[in-house]
Image (cartoon, rainbow, N blue to C red; front, side):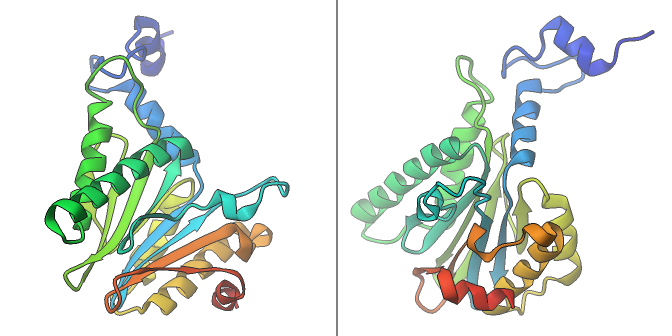
Length: 241
């Protein structure tokens, strides 16, 4: 009986380093890291007509944890926000680097950094850890949203260091199911309010009896103000009715 390909790769040691290609062209440690993202809690981003919004499931299972300490919407700069799926501590490192880059840009050029500069730096950092030995790949996918020069931007970077701009996207455990809904029903003419209600409806269908408004982080940046606004508490509950 022939041994399955994946087992052959493991037996030959092709999964022992992120820098070692298997004979059929795979970086197995990178592919394993991608599976971590698929186990992470969901985040959804929408590029709406009046701005950009991120909705993230905090998925807190322990009621002893203070909910505000488990935020999944990270402020990179006042006009740029990020969220992640996968290992939260890996995301924190990349967000910290992004915040430093944003402040350096502000001091050096006296202007707010463009979102594409931030996502390119994040993607470059992630790519480096698939190319050089001595460290594992980042086990996280980053979704970045922001407003620059009157336009809204939504980007996602994956484990390999690739990044793309999106009209709408989802990362995490149910990403394909959510993306199917986005492909069918998302419209670029949606407002931020309509977008939040739309995503909450998707989560209601997916989570069923486990749906609770308190488990979500919501943040958006409008074209008008270009500043992060967080939606919490009673303000968030009205979107789930």
